[in-house]
Length: 116
Length: 108
Image (cartoon, rainbow over the protein chains, first blue to last red):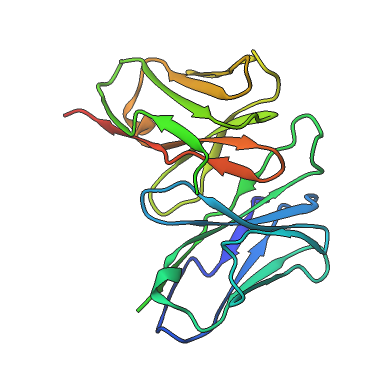
């Protein structure tokens, strides 16, 4: 299967701990996006990369959040000093170059985070 | 927060019925997309619309990109049990802005 993959699928942590999630995009896709989804809501944009460059960060992304895509392939999202309000589904999506006909974002299965 | 208003919030379907849902925005988008999400999974793309006024079908699904570029609708014809789930509209500039979803449930 060559879709977007995310690891882990589920994470339970205690408040104050750090967590890191990984996303592997579709292999030829050069854009990678992170979204957060809380219960009963649609996904909300957090940040995105084109190749290894992080081009935008939402104001939802506090200083405790950091994302990297070091070689333009997989990406990691780290949350430091987790808070209960960080509990959510974290979704990764990838796409080809913006503007190309047929370009769109394909989502991974998500990582569900529960902060106790 | 959400920029898109999606309605209805929820609906019950009976097998064989046609289903409609729509999405409006205060902003103009160059692309509209419709996704379906099952519990515990990521959104799966159903239909993508790239031109204002475009009407696109994918099997029993039909979607239209509003002429003002501020709205879209999705129709599901002859619904079947596996159509249950949450349907999201999304407008794209580069990032996606999502509606809050329409939850489709089978009427007993």
